[in-house]
Image (tube, rainbow, N blue to C red; front, side, top):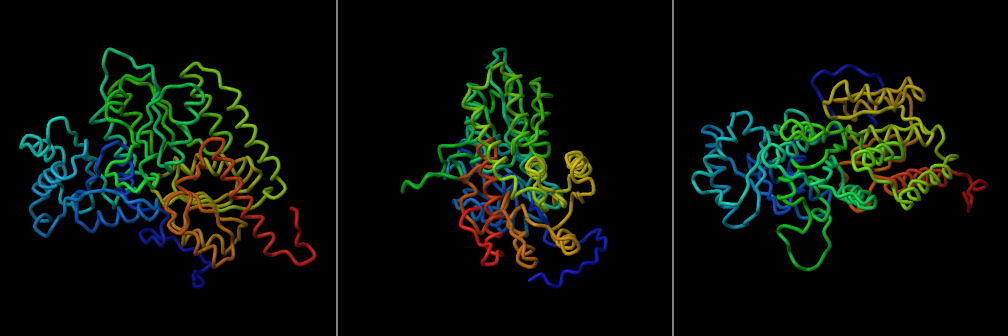
Length: 458
């Protein structure tokens, strides 16, 4: 399918082929779904909203509820203020959410729509009922990626809602990053296991992984409650999981409400989860229970048991920057060699420097790149092959063309199921991810083994 990809690598300044990312409003919509009773609104054309909803629906296998300002040719000339006012009137009248989270698109950003003014005018005109909330984030698709959109919408939650009073709540804020709902649930379970009271926002668990009951729920039971979002300004501290997704909201909360913050890597793998646990201990002054030590020990046991199949296997890692960073560190801890590490998000030198620091003692000559694409990754692999691909489903074409096994990890995954239910975060998530990696390698070992080496026991 990709057999025409050339081995010769030529610098491309403008063209991207099969970029390992998608657009900002998708991330903003996903973040908005993490607020209980919130209806995302795409401020642009109906086609944009349809794409954002369908992409999330295909990944999570869940119906994604969202509205649109439904731009027409006239809106492109005169602006979308009237469209937004009508959209808010219809949304609150027909669907009655507690909040509407507005994200812009390329069109509304290009014509320069003034969202704060539009929202204020809509409230003054009565389009926004008393006791209801409207927030917005600027998310043009021609800047950043879905990771940026998630970050911008999460920051908007702080900007519009967080408030500081004279009464501390003695809670921790945890911003989980752009992860699966199962990962958010894993983070919450670990925090609960340690006996810590926390506000996790946004929280997509029980929103895009809801049980089938036979009854339709416009607003599922999950999501962060609006009063809790407001109360984040009274918390003891904020732990932001992921530099490129969660840092902006944590800094905004620190500046607005003087809540101290610490930015950590996503807790994927052993060391990243250890650092998360250590930060929880420091900010909450608790002692980890024996059950948590047992969970950690089980992950270490799996890492040890599988060493002979993992050692010095060459891996290409690609996807969202925060997930790629933690996954790269985890692979190194397992004895593997991440030789190509790329992200399609334009996150610049910070990503490259962080990954190179992780790899400096094990794979010092690894190729690390931000704002890259999978065409470039394929060319690298054509010149020097790898044993495994770790990333989203778009790498399956490289895997097929080069006969390389792939472990699906990250966003989007449109051709498999289960990823929204099985976490890769925290100790148990690390066990699942590592088992998936090892079983994929063992499957390939069996496939390629001659009859005399086709073993019943590995």
